[in-house]
Amino acid sequence: SDLAATGQVELAELRHGSYRVDRGRAAFEIAGSRARGDARLDLPGGGSFGAVFSGRVLDSVPTWELRNGEFSRVDFAARAGSDGPHTDLNGRFSASGSGRSLETGLTARANLELGPSRVNRAELRDGALSLVLEREAFRGDVQLQGAGLALASEFNGTLGAHSKSVRAT
Image 1 (cartoon, helix red, strand yellow):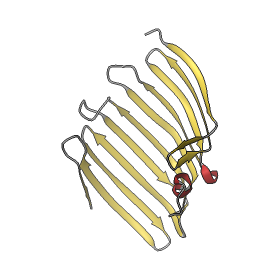
Image 2 (tube, helix red, strand yellow):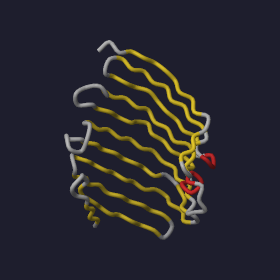
Image 3 (cartoon, helix red, strand yellow):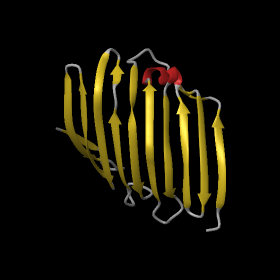
Image 4 (cartoon, helix red, strand yellow):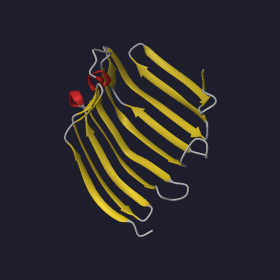
């Protein structure tokens, strides 16, 4: 394909229902079926969210990757315009995948590492979440540690038009 484009998008403010983003920026480059770029969002309360992306989005089986993902001071209550619970979440993430839909073989992997964070007054030292999606089946695990808190769980389930289930241990 001879498709080629570069660009930058600046977002002054976005409101969708009660959700809000204060500012955003994305830069991208498309060459043939390859795309790459980076994006950053500034959230209410001083939080931020950003990542670098790349992929072959126009291939018959598209592939994509998010890397160097970071989030800081994310407060879901402030983002939603609600009174609580307030969060101060910090960490890193990455993800990759291929396919167009669950029905045609979508696969994805995601990892999140939580750094020192807070939910209301509860302090979290660290945590991790991993998730694997293969067609309509998913599996993963979550771990959280904090003052007086230690949680480790595995989960699995199915998604799809005809069945949805989740099981955690």
